[in-house]
Image 1 (tube, rainbow, N blue to C red):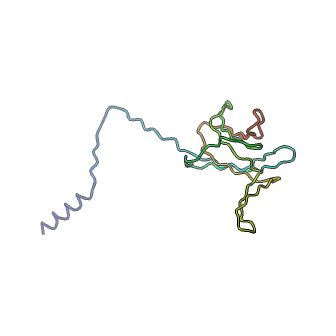
Image 2: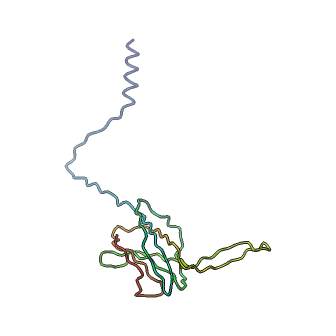
Image 3: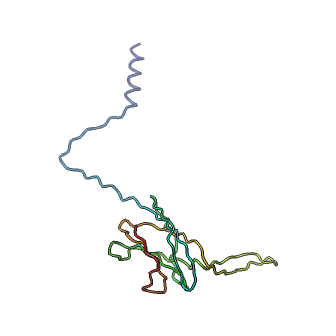
Length: 156
């Protein structure tokens, strides 16, 4: 009978964890890591004589984008640049966006050959996603080829 109690005690003792309580005079500072965030922006883009942008929506969520994309080195007319800016409107980060009003389609023609067609739209919806930097206070959209032409600036 004693062996059953002893066996039961050993089983219970082996399943519990022992936490050492140490006292230390040094102060331990806990630093909370900055959570990375992604911002999703939605705009309506239209063109009469000039490109016009209308802000629709923004969503900020926890996470980060994959870093395996190539930055564009070439540009064409109508390409946009989306710039994250701090309180003093200094650029923190930016991404280049192809002209949203020009869509390229590939299709199989009647003879079965792969063909390409370019369509210029009058209006469309533009969705942008990018890693949101912690110090970002403004997001600005500009035409890439024009230096001082800010199309739209929103405050976060």
